[in-house]
Each structure stands twice: as C-alpha cells, then as structure tokens.
Image (cartoon, rainbow, N blue to C red; front, side, top):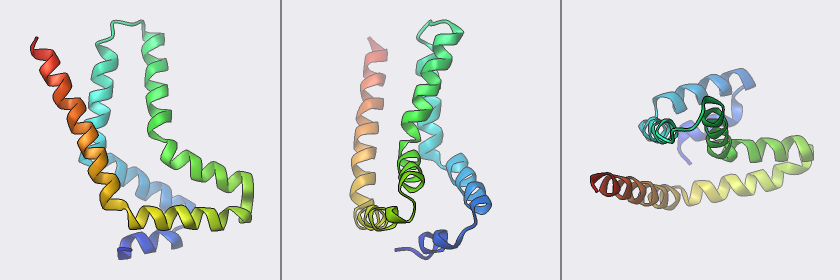
Length: 119
C-alpha cells in the first residue's frame, strides 16, 4: 500500500474530513462525473423539486463507497474491524483493476452520450 494510504489510519476524524473534501474536490474524475450528472439532471426539463431529488439520489449513490463502511462500523462497532480490514485489503490489491473497469464504463457512457447527441 502507498505511504499516503497507510497514513490514513492515523488521521483524526477532523483531518480525515478535510483530506476527503480536498481529494474529492480536486479529483478530475469526480469533477467530470459531477458536471456530467448535473448537466444531465438540468436537461431533464423536470421541476426544481424533481431535479433536487435526482441530485440527492446521485449524491447518495456516489457516496455508497463511504456510507457502507461507516454504517458497518457504527452498526457493528469493534466487531467490524476484521471485515473492514478485509475490504481494505481487497481494494488495495485490486485498485488498478477497479479503476480500469470504472474508466472503461464511464468512457463508454460518455462516448455513447456524445454519439447520441450528434443525431
């Protein structure tokens, strides 16, 4: 695991929140996905309330990678440590594969939307 990922285990909750906001805010992948989602939602022609609901659903789905481990920790307490460690190990081992699959899927979606927009 990279040094910066190992250092995450020593962060206080406040520092973890600040680093998470910084990393998600400046991450080009997140920016492109968020802009794409907001553009799609804005083009639906739905009411403001419906667009707000769509945005909230998008945020919840996009946050599941954070929500699930946090919920597991709060639901199971110290008993969650082995399972969370297992998930962390799997993600560390398969990071490149996960990112490659995500980029292929997102790329295909963006190309498909682009081709669809031409017609």
